[in-house]
Length: 245
Image: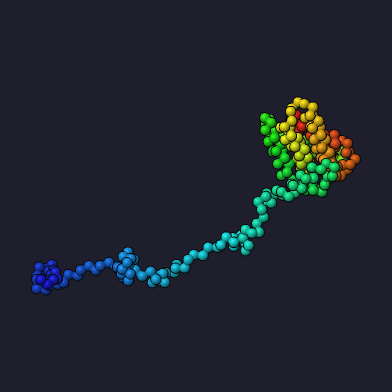
């Protein structure tokens, strides 16, 4: 039986002028893909990629171009940015180990990195001995620096050029013999004659080194060598009492 299009009538009800009803058009459908193996791909990818303006991949700057043409290759090391010169600390430490040949030129550039390491090592050895002295050590070093600064500037007067920062640096670096004494005291019986003799040797060592550096780095220091030696001896004798007692 042939398909007969539907017939609609006018509002007047007359069937003499039939009119064909317009069927709604189907929604837009993209053309079918030529590849039947991909049923869900119903449009041409190549034509869409060519027609859009965002077909090119976004360009991001490479890490080597960030911060300059050479990137991170020219960045200084982290310790250098923090002001910590490991080579300088090593050279100053070696100079302290020889009390008879002191290179005062290495200590003209004062720093606190090496003294801080020595003080923390001193506190750690004291902790291993059952003594918690971190706060006492830091407080005594500060007071000792103030003491040495006041004593020297009272002796030198207007010609004194030893500032507080350099005093703290010198006293901290010369703490190395006392740090070695605290490490050695872990293996020596306390309260005996041996620990007393060893303590005297290390205190004289630290006093000689600190006195030599202060005299060489400060103006008019040679004229007051005896008083400077006495002040340094009191400072390091005070720290040695933490080890002995």
